[in-house]
Image (tube, rainbow, N blue to C red; front, side, top):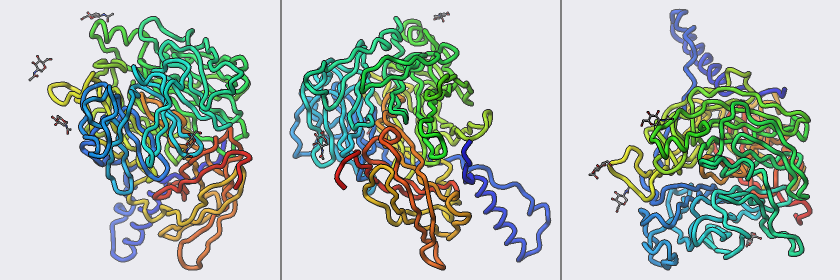
Amino acid sequence: MPKTSTSPFLLLSLIITTCIAHAAGDTWQEPEEVQQPAAAIFPGEWQLLHANTGVSAMHMQLLPGDFVLMFDRTDSGPSNISLDALSPCVSRAAADCTAHSVLLDLRSNTLRPYPLATNPWCSSAALLPNGTLLQTGGFSNGDRIARLFSPSDGWLDLPDFLAVRRWYATDILLADGRVLILGGRRQFNFEFFPRDDVTTAQLTLFPFLEETTDIDGENNLYPFLHLLPDGNVFAFANDRAVVFDPYNRAPLRRLPSIPGGVPRNYPSSGSSVLLPLRPEYSPSHAEVLVCGGAPRGAYRLALRNGTFVAADRTCGRIAPTDPNPVWAMEEMPVPRVMGDMVLLPTGDVLIVNGAAAGTAGWELGREAVTSPVLYSPETPLGDRFVVLAGSGVPRMYHSSATLDTMGRVLVGGSNPHVGYVFDNVTYPTELSLEAFLPPYLDARLDGVRPRIVAAPVEAGYGEVVHVRFEVPGGAVSGGPEEVRVAAVAPAFATHSFGMNQRVVFLAVGNVVQLDAGGGVYEAQVAAPPSPSVAPPGYYLWFVLHAGVPSSAAAWVRIRPLGAAT
Ligand SMILES: *[C@@H]1O[C@H](CO)[C@@H](O)[C@H](O)[C@H]1NC(C)=O
Ligand SMILES: *[C@@H]1O[C@H](CO)[C@@H](O)[C@H](O)[C@H]1NC(C)=O
Ligand SMILES: *[C@@H]1O[C@H](CO)[C@@H](O)[C@H](O)[C@H]1NC(C)=O
Ligand SMILES: *[C@@H]1O[C@H](CO)[C@@H](O)[C@H](O)[C@H]1NC(C)=O
């Protein structure tokens, strides 16, 4: 097991103990007061960034340059934000002439509407290696469209790009920089962006998705896909998992089914992450975590019978790269369906949003769970979960969550209705955007929190680069083990799954202090070793000092293999 760096909480209790000790030196105190317990763990904090972003954030993606794209379907009636006077009203579906996509500029916290020509309802996406967002599929006039989005050019439709209609598909960026586009309702196949060369068929059949379709409610939509560090792809649908090689279209390797038989994919929506990859691990070792879901039959009972059964509270953890992988099961403090799992720069996982009863789908969720839980993968079994501060806002079906450049978790969306409904319903359409500040954003840790002063704009695989940072307290001690660097790939969040979400800890070499008195340091950092560990493209690099992530991340682009410097 890898050595874990000092936890921020341990550090916090040390600081508090030190302060008390200092105070005790000046004035006489009762010994009992000196021995009072350290303050409780900071349970996190919720901040309202916008009461009304204009659209309900069914889909959310952090983009390089510190923008967050949020978009909804175009066929549910007017949104709450008008298009710019200069933007033509392009959409037939959106003849209401309101905007169904908005871009948040994180630096100014301002919103800008963008016109969407076709309907991206329940679609999929992946950030391309060049920083442009590829978004695929949707409904009606949007179901075979691939779209490109950049803040400067807005949306560009590539009509008829997809070989088939894709609604509820999953996209992931592969090691070779292509995007795998897999599944969707009644689609048991995959294809690529860019397209394969024209001599091979555009579609590859993937019968695993047919096998995992439940008669009632399917329970295998938005399959969980993770790129493994050996280059293969892990796919999870319903309660089953396989590993396959999409490049050579080789046969699947079947993994055991997750114990318990509970489906984990839409509409029994649980969530899943690839746990952080660490340089201490053997190069091909990876683990996947799957949490929450709803029992088989829950969708039918909610839809047809008005019975909302309790969500599942289990998580399963497996190392698909092992020769004989097995699921290790554990229990969350609260059951949850429609939770979003967000990887944090500390390597922990935040599980946020969702409900304790019912399923995904219009009007089918009950008992909102507004308290996130934190899962620490390196902590011994039984002690991994902590319940954090709750939000006042239920986030049910069609909500989303993503990490931002400041290490906050942005939480938006929630609209379990056909259109926008604000009154006389238990769970009104949510147009607000909140930021959840995880425990490491505790202001009491500001003295040890690093601030990145200089980082490379890009790096090649395995290249050793320098990252310069400052620690206000000037407290770096103990050498490189106190300093870590996490590379975080920004996810496309929708329907309780963050596509392409990834945390890769980078190998840190020498850390040298640059100024005698102050707190400026420079660390030697090795860029990810291979495109299977980290596919090419944009990553947020956070420096961690004593377990506390930097106040902001630097965007670093990992160049594709063979690209000119
Ligand atoms: C959204 O727009 C509707 C219709 O104009 C209005 O009634 C409602 O108050 C708005 N909601 C918010 C949260 O701004
Ligand atoms: C990024 O790549 C896509 C796909 O090749 C291309 O269409 C797009 O124009 C590129 N964007 C930039 C900014 O170069
Ligand atoms: C269906 O709902 C009724 C009440 O409306 C309840 O009595 C019955 O147990 C439910 N069926 C199941 C299988 O839960
Ligand atoms: C509120 O909802 C109830 C139940 O759906 C309905 O009977 C009632 O008419 C609604 N009230 C208003 C003011 O829309």
